[in-house]
Image 1 (cartoon, rainbow, N blue to C red):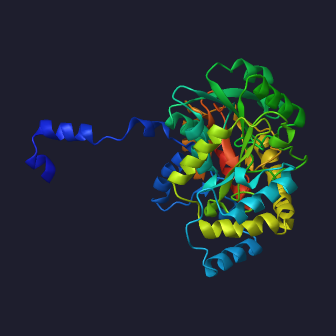
Image 2 (image 1 turned 45 degrees about the vertical axis):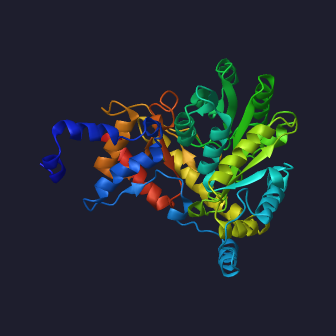
Image 3 (image 1 turned 90 degrees about the vertical axis):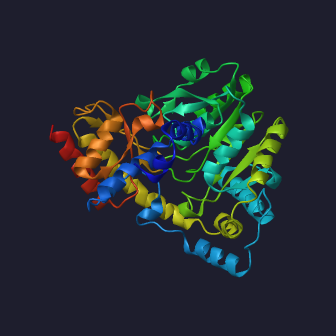
Length: 415
């Protein structure tokens, strides 16, 4: 019996436990790629090393933030850029982002329609907070990056997944997308290149999606964090294809610029028909409530936008070799098949034989326990469309990937 239990009557203790419960909304805020880490920590406590292929952090492996960007951060701090920035972002940051979007994605963005955020995750919170009333819906790709579903539910909205066709390189199924639209639908989310599948949507498909959004008066949300990490083909920017449909773009410096720990990102608004004034003001209100994004990092990201980009080609070249190895190796394992990723740095293999596991989550946790390799269960990216899959990164050097996939193969052969 605890000291508290000794002094309180059981009925009173029960009442206190009832009062001190978390809000129900936090039960909706579950992100699979972070949840599985808790299980890995328990394995590590026993002294075993875990090969972690669960999270898209290039800097955990043999990638690093380019020197000119690191130098810009040091100079920003020494130049006393340590004050609160404006809630929307430093003017020089927003102007640099506008120049980048024009150069990289061929999109004209007014710097006043850009907001600095602490990671794309904060940008997602800003957008769904300003956009959704309880019960309203966002169409999300199935499978999808789980924070979109988590934060939509957190705001009492409803994420509605539309099917992406695994047999067609995970391209969105346009007919299914159209069928999912209701009078409660507010927005259509496009993640291109895609997380978790590594899909790169072709221009024709993108145009159809934008046209449908225009037909039903939907806002397009465009997640573009992997915009320059593509392999065989060039990516077409969502906003560059939109002449009369508003697009809210979400992008940042974690992936292409190899600065995930900096948590620097931005939202931009491309709004040719000028329909988004009130929603944009709502986003600004949320930004003001959280004061500002990190000031010296914004200053350093000006150098990222305007500086040399030759490091991107080197990074993509390394990743292409690792992508090729990953796809080949996974397809050689009996009971597993894998569509070749065309962008980002994820693969989303199909599990044809769960080897006695009841679910893909149980499958992933068994591999973690028995072989000390950490993947993310596919159903964590959508219960319907992610089912019987898992997500892996191909960021590590090939020798690490080889060891991880050898262990996976041993697991598949041992049952």
